[in-house]
Amino acid sequence: MTNQLNIVTQEEPEARFLAQSLEKASFPNNLENLRGKRVIFKHDFSKECLPLQPLRKSSRIEFFREIREFSPHPKEREIAAIDSSCVLVGETEEGAIYSGRVTAVRAFGRKIKTYIRFGPAIFYLEPNSMFPSLPSRLSRKIINILLLDKGLAEKFIRTQLERWLQFELSGELTQGIILIDGGLRSSDLESREFSLSEIERRSEENSNQILGISKSTNLRLISSYALELDFCRSGGVYLDITDSLKMILPKLHCRVLVAKLSANAPAFRVDCARSNLEDDSQVLSDLKHNDVIYRGYPETLRLAHHLSTLDISTVNSIRAYLSRKYEMTAVPNDDLRATVLGKLL
Image (cartoon, rainbow, N blue to C red; front, side, top):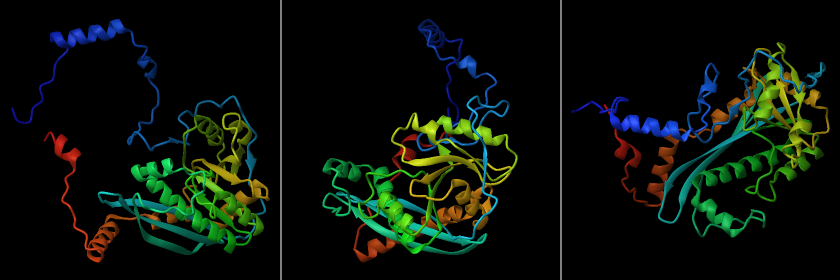
């Protein structure tokens, strides 16, 4: 046999025994309740969150809230959107090499004006690494986990880069809007000097407004509220769901909205910093007026994402640079998963 699989059919004794055992176990799988349902299947099994786009469009949710409109009097102001990326470049016996890049894209009057980009910066994390900027509450145990967990290390570098650039822009801009990809949540991985609270304080001094925009969520409650906006066929509308979220997230330190920036576009979660002194309807109106809205999403954030991404050619250049400059020896390695599993055909 070459390209053929031996599949045990239901007629064979082993299969009948297994089926009978499962029936006797009476597992409450409720699979019949799936019949006719709409479903969104996950693909990476870990990172993917629930989309804000609702699955049902047939009826309204019971906990209806007042749909508010953006201010009809937008103001001219500058928009600055920040995003970053980080990749694992290589590993040594003691640690790991990472590369990160952070970008800010600026817009004004519905035109993209310019962008600034820092990186790729190279970081080597190993047991003797020093973290002078980290808060004292970050224990050595957490630092050791940081050195062992590659995903956490990448998040740490992204957080450092983003907070640094957000802090710089909060002091440079005046009466502007700073856009952050994701929610407005402080992190144990951020430094004292460039913490979210310091960025909010500096933004308040310069009359800047901070918004965090999320494309997905882990909370089904937010998806349910997005359904309410789906019935609204016009753009420039939002719901304030802060009070509802505080019932399940008592430590929430920002106002949370679900906003629809343009018609026939999805709704997004929008976090408004507690330092924002202007009305939310005015800030959202100014964002829509000054940014370029692409498929209902700020173009500045979309460009910041693409401009900060590190492609394979850049990573290969970094590897070649490190090997040449530091006389490193590349150890041949195989993809163990591909070697073990192989291909059926």
